[in-house]
Image 1 (spheres, rainbow, N blue to C red):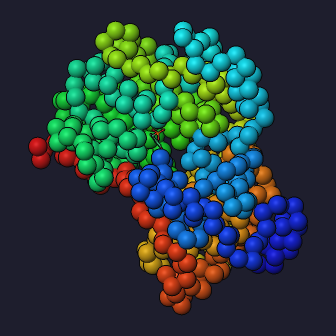
Image 2: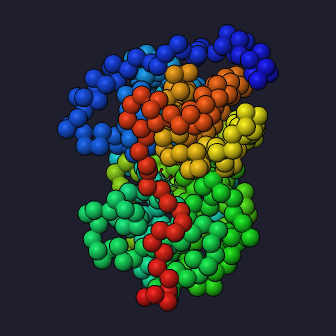
Length: 457
Ligand SMILES: Cc1ncc(COP(=O)(O)O)c(C=O)c1O
């Protein structure tokens, strides 16, 4: 404990975020929220940014500015951000090299009436760094490219069913597997099934002769075990199934070329978005030429803003910066310091019901139900971190602008908050201490969901 207390003063002096005396004033956030009530259903365009993911009444709801790793809410409160726009900010807010590329392109135009050279230049760059990028297409959102990949797989194989493992976006074919699937036709629900990560038997049991595609996040937080990814890829080859890696999170973070580079398992198709353009909206589909070829004539995948030039320029600048500054190593080292630091604090103060799990580039804090409802425990930690100037929803999405000072400050805050949590758990008062509406569950599931074993059909 002394170690942390000694560091505390110098950290506070060097970090603009300070250990506040109280929870932030969020009047303007709440005013906007009221104005949105009834006008914007569900309030947010992105589930993870919406009010259900933050303690309603304590957390800010609207952000207006970001610089580096810090953000400011509409009431003027400053926070260290560990969400980074839910993934896109790989370099940091208002990162000069990327903003410069956007401004330079802006002088010449945003969207054109013919194709733009950047479409070719970026594709050539991607071919150099992503192992399976023999062919490349662009679109605007992650769901666009995962859905394109599924359509391509169906066209290429002449089969219909899809097996998935992870989250893949809002379109019918995927949403049919989750509980919130109203509006998806029953016929569509019969076409997509899930399998358990690291559960090769659930994978094998889900396969029949009509499976066209297997799409999975190559890792979320749990590492692959017993050659799981290799086995999946071999089984796909044997069964004429198109293997798709959804690299939204792993791409340009885990390794430059994503999980396919990191694990040396090359999928037929891969989908990227989030980190590739430091906040600009672009999604990328890469794949083997002989499969992507179906896009030439048979498969329809076109959209007005697919070749929008500001995002292409931002992607090129972001990738070059990731290469030049060895951002992958930086994120790995700093992310490791935060993840290991969290686990060391838990050990030091003697609590075994919380830990940080996952890879260094993206870890997550978990809570064991033996200490109480994990969402209540998470809400408690979130509200206390917000009080200390840290915007947190359980993830450590490290970017290149996060500093050692940020991480040391955060570990000091964690130390304080975990001591408070320990006391509250021991006294059974965690829920009484939540000062607003607690965080609600999300729906992400990667195991034991709707796998339909072949023998049950
Ligand atoms: C792994 C994964 N795939 C697909 C998507 C969908 O991307 P988008 O929200 O850009 O449509 C997401 C979004 O969070 C994701 O995490």
